[in-house]
Length: 584
Image (cartoon, rainbow, N blue to C red; front, side, top):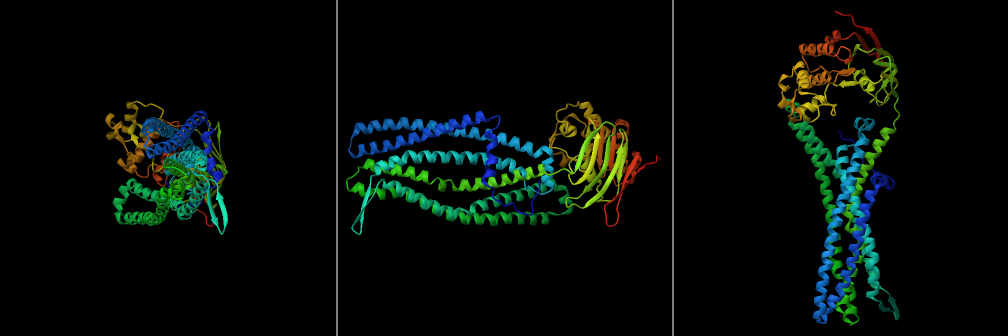
């Protein structure tokens, strides 16, 4: 996980938004997805139809009250009962199906994005180049917000459009014309309540947009600050031992305080904008309750319409006004959704950019050598050369030591061999159809049972307890070679010391038995006697395995047959020589 030093605040274009949304609806699950969406839309239309029925019910019911017509009053109560029950059933299953569609969409997108992120080492390049901040949040939170927000906004807009067209004709027909005179000129506005509703919603929408527009940017920043603060807390948990030894609590506290101050400052900005937005939206909503009655009351008091018609006008006006006010009602959700889209669009673009980058180093296979380098040049990301035009080869079963001063590119060489270092030129050729295993200085140990951690990355291969216990005992980890410990679920990178972690990685190598083993300072946390033990195990247990070791200790040389030596040169890249190591 990386923390960006520069805030990514670009707004995604609508074309990029469509690129995020459309894949699921064209995927192998499209028929199921469109079927669920169609059912939800039908239920939404049925809900609008019932709203029209309720509107007509208002007129008949209140006319019955005004005329003291008890039989009609009783009949309308019965009609209301079955309308309400039907409305409840439709509302419940519309929400139920929407939630199901949301989870199906989220599951599909999560699988796609995980595949995209983990393919071609995109996760490594985006992290190394600091192109994406907090990718875990993008996949876990933002995909959830995208799917739920998109469905909510689209279905809400559809419902509003259908409601508008359904009720605008009702409001037009029942509101009648409005006649008035100005300077002896007579004016008549047909369906005047419709025009008042449009004007009311237009003015309100313009005010809400001008007041609430900053929330899009502030919401984006808030997620960014929250993720950085959360990352700081995780870093303390992951490095608790080192921080405690350094007594770095004050420094960590100051850093966390600084990160939280950013959260607090941005939150106060959100509060100020939200306060103004709430003033505008609440005034708009409250005044909307009385506005249609005020506008229609002259016709009621003149006797042109009865109480039922007045209530029907008020209800129809409310429906039209709500439909026209979709933007106002959905503004908060729309602002959050747009911030989510901006983050996902940036994440998507970063992965596409990484995958489109040319790979200067070609990795191929051969049938003769365990490893062959042909005119290999490695550069730093800024283009500075580490070393140039290196050619070397190791045969199956050979053991090679890579030595040289720090910063000359020894570890980078292993990254290039693994196919994850794109900066440079030349060719790397590996033995065809063989198994490779890389043991870095800080071995990766996944959270889970010890048996899973020991056999990683062979999660699909079963090893017996006897095999696991044997390699643990061979690598001087007898306290872990117990059945109950093998099944213990824990964060082993926290429970084991650096030396124990490196011994565990050697036990992993003995278990997996790779054809070629790459060691990058893999014994740096061990004492010399333990180092001698694990290297001797490699010679005795894996005699046919090719080994290439990066190490600074001269004591490692005796376990190898050849040495690839890098040397610093003035004003230029490192020099390279290959030589045999004489047996003692």
